[in-house]
Structures are given as C-alpha cells and as structure tokens.
Image (cartoon, rainbow, N blue to C red; front, side, top):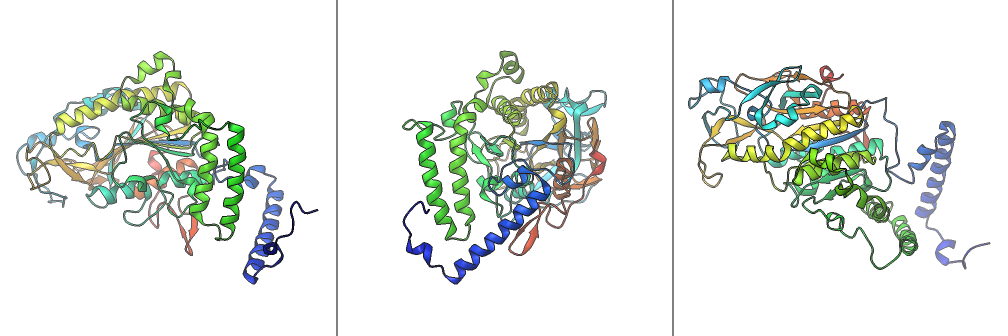
Length: 481
C-alpha cells in the first residue's frame, strides 16, 4: 500500500530519469554483492556516511595527525639549524651563489640566539625552543626541506594542498577521505587559527574536488566560550528531539532537490554540515572546554592562546578527530622582515612551553606512537640580512627575507625515527644540499606513515586520477622508525 496518493511525477519518467534510476539500481545491487563478499558493515556504511572509519591500504603506524603550522616562515638558522659559519662572515657578503629571493638581501646575518646540544642524541637546538628540546630524542629534524617559490600564497597552498596555483584538496581533506573519522559527533578535520583567517584563508583547508564532508572546519581560538568558538553550536529555541524532526524534514527536502541535480557536491556538503552541526551539540562543548583538565595539566601547558590551542588539540585527538591543524594566528606572524630577534623571541615564547608540554602529554598517555606531530612553516628565511625596499619593511636592517631554497621542519611520533637529523643545508643555511626533501616528498612520507601508497591513493575527477603528490614525491625512508 502506498503511503501517499499517487503523484503524476512518480508515474511518468523521462528517458534520462529512467536510465539514471535503473543505473543506480544496478550499482546498488553490485555494491550489496561486494559488501556481502567482504562481510564488512563499515564498508556498507561508507555510502551513507563519508566520515565512517576506513582501513588504510596497509597497516600504518600513525592513526592521526597534528600539524603545528608556523605561518609566515620561521627562521631555520635561528631555531633548529645552527650555522656558526655565519659569524665568520658577519657584515660581509657570503662566498656563494646569489640565490634569487623575493627582496634584496645583503651581508651575512648571524643568529642572535645560542644553540646547545640536547638529549642523548646531542641535536643542537636554539635557546628559543628549550622546552621543545627536552623531547628532542623523540623528534626527527628535517634540515633539508625546500619549496618552489619565495612567496607566501603559493607556498602555503603547496604545503597544505600539494599544488601552488590550482584548487586542490588539502592534506587534511585527503587524510579524512582516506581514513574517515573515529568520532562521528565532531568534524574529522579541524583547523584552529586565533584572530581570523591566515593568508589564503579557507583554501588552506579546502576539500577541493573531494566531497564537502572532508573540508576542514575552522575554529577561531581567540575565544574561550564554546558558543563563540563555534557559532550556533546550541539551539536555544528548540529541544534536541524537535531539532531532529526538523532536520529529518529538511534532509528529505534536500535529498529530493539533490536528486534532480545529479548529486551536486556543494549541496551534499550543506546536507552533511546540517547533520554534523546537530551531532556536535553533544561533544563539541566538552572537547573545547579546557577547564575540565586537571590543574596540573593546565599548568604544564602554561598560559596564553597557543597553550589553550594545543590543549584543545590534544583533547580533539583523544576524542577521535583524525586531523588537527593549529595555526600561529591570522596573517603571517613569523614573517619577520624587521625586528626578527624581538618577534621570534616573542613568538617562540608563546609556543615553546605548550609544544614541550604537548609532546610529554601525548607520550605519557600512550598517544605519541600513533600521533604524527608536524612542525614548520611554508618556507624558511635567508641567512643574509634583508635590505631596505620601498614599501616592504621599515629599513631597520635586522630581519630576514623569505627563503624557499632550504629550511627546517620536524616530525615526532607516528612511526618516525626520533633523535635524528635528516639532510642539511649548505654551511650558511641558504640552500638544501644534503638529501633535499621537497614538499611532495614530505607528503609522500606522511601518507606512508598513515598506511597509504601516495602513488595509488587517488580520487578520480574530471577524467583523471588525482593524488596529493600530483605526479611527484618519494617516501623518505631513512626517517621511518
């Protein structure tokens, strides 16, 4: 018996609609057969919930990622790549090739900070990161990173999306596409940035041509109240049951609308966002409320926005969020063309204690082995001083320009070899010289740690199989534990 009176639109189908419905029916039969053979309920659920947990291509050591993004480009020669030879040439031109930079640079500019060997590994770390250095034996320091150009916008997109110019899915979107999420009441991918968007805004965590469910959810962590952190997290006018009935009606209407538009990805994203917003009312407030942490833990991380961000990040990872990205702040805070000593000391002061606490906290909870922590910016800075340029800096001659030729990042946990240094820049820190690691190589290595072959981890779009590493990249196997 039909649940409603017959409608003309149900009785007459166009040839296109007939073929579409029959085709979908055959696909459903094939899917049911495949699922039956696999005997996996989880696989069947993928057609319903794109964020349901998935298995990687092979067992990976990392289950989740925390990306600490120092946007703007921290100076590697002042943080994790000591270059004593700069002191010898202080105030003099360097006897090397004149690498092209975005602005004019001059003489050698030695670091203003002291380096010291730390841990059993004896890796040298700047005084700026003394708390982080307490966990140096868990860090793998990549001193030979390099990118393509010395400009923020393309370098940010290259680091985050594997492509400097065209719209492509972000790394966090690829990861959640491949692994789903372990918590269906929170987004699988969260990007936290206090004070507004960074350069390139939401493109840094875009889903691109992947389904909208894999887009990063932005959180402005300058706020402490959960209702300000996440807009409209609570409905003050309807009960949860009433919201569910309203949402079911809206879902039905949206599905009918979507069916006439050949599964429009933007509409699908909107449908998923309504569902997620409803579920988040349960878990989000708890996840972002750091006052629920013991005082000893809060004291370990210290005061300030960055400490609160990292404590929230650990809570999100603990609750099953797959990919968490934590930004320094709006704009490009580490972009210190002038007053580098003052600004780097201030920024590192905000980050150092929280990072040191995070690494210890993850380790004592048994989470570090399965959590890949990544630190770095979109490029480094020149070992030479930046010269005054009209409209670009104040002309104080105490800062550094952008440097994509060579810079440093580090990784910890998640299957990397701790207490090691991989690669090197030249004796002055200008260009990656020993075992260069391109961004594509970094992405290939990250995917390998998660259990994916970067050459086979693809998504078909516009008649082509796309991947995070495009047609490049190799796994840096020497950094694997």
